[in-house]
Amino acid sequence: MSELYYAAACQTAFDCPADRSSIEERTRRMCTIAEQTIVGYEPFFDVRLLAFPEFAHAAPIYDSIDKLRDRLAVPIPNEHTERYTRLARQYGCYIQTGTFLEVDSAYPDAVFNTTLLIGPGGILSKYRKVNPWIPWELHASPHDIAGYSEDLFPVVDTELGRLGVAICYDWLFPETLREIAFRGAEVIIRVSAYMDPWGATPPMDWWTLFNRARAVENTVYVVAANQGASLACYPPFSWPGGSMVVDYDGRILAQADPGPGEKVVVAPLDIGALRHERARRSGHDMRAHLRSEAHDYLATGRLGAGGAAASDFTRAAIEQRIRAAKARLDE
Image 1: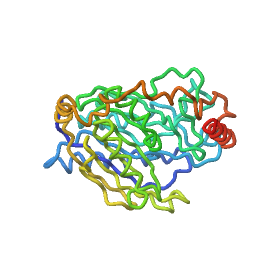
Image 2 (image 1 turned 30 degrees about the vertical axis):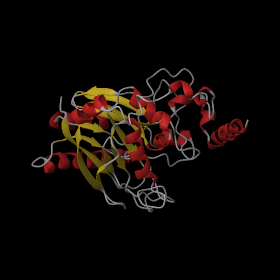
Image 3 (image 1 turned 30 degrees about the horizontal axis):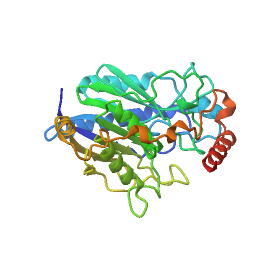
Image 4 (image 1 turned 180 degrees about the vertical axis):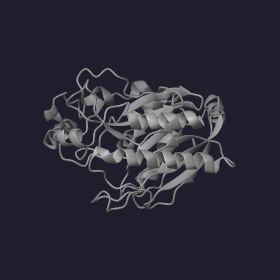
């Protein structure tokens, strides 16, 4: 068990890929960044965990699921995940990949936004974004799939501690991060493409705000990798970067200067200290203090689950679900 090691939040600045032929180039670049980080910092820090941003391989830039499936989506595992596995095996590290747009023959009408935790032994977990940034993201939440039986919130017990992950907009839902924490996560990784104006600078620095708040609420380390792409790459949005590592008391241990560009920041994660504080503290332990029985709002559906038909993943269908949810809020 490596109770003290370093984590790297690795920020990319890719342009927007038009088809899946560009994924290989992006994978190669991220493997280079990972290797340079491990080797370059070796005289100083033992970097064992590396995280990359959302949309690092592909982004949902088209206006239909059919186009995303035909041009950008890939099955998992694939040749790219094999490349990450070889790198993890060579250096004994763990990589939280940037997201893929994923197709799965078990769910033929859906495209998922998926990140993988890969270690020396291969793929350890697959996380599919539970809360797409609607109405713009047409890819499916696994919550939308009738009969979906796979784990929505995997937490993996590794030599680096118990690792969980959530993607970008997921972090604006405290329930999602709570679920991951109550499943035992000690480090929660944020794989994100968080754009301006909700970025890393005032007056609406939601990126920093929610990373720190979720760390404190759940007594976890947060390793958060954000896109650093410019406006030219993903119009009309620019991506402020600000990738960061936060400790379980909400202290920022390292943060990239806000602004576009490739950047890497590293910081120590002391899992032994986290476990000690979780066991010792009687104050500010919001997990132990939670009065579950007092909160019944989750018993009433809001957005609700969609179906498994392709027609449920159009922008018109998603906006209709939002209108219905708003009506339920008013009841």
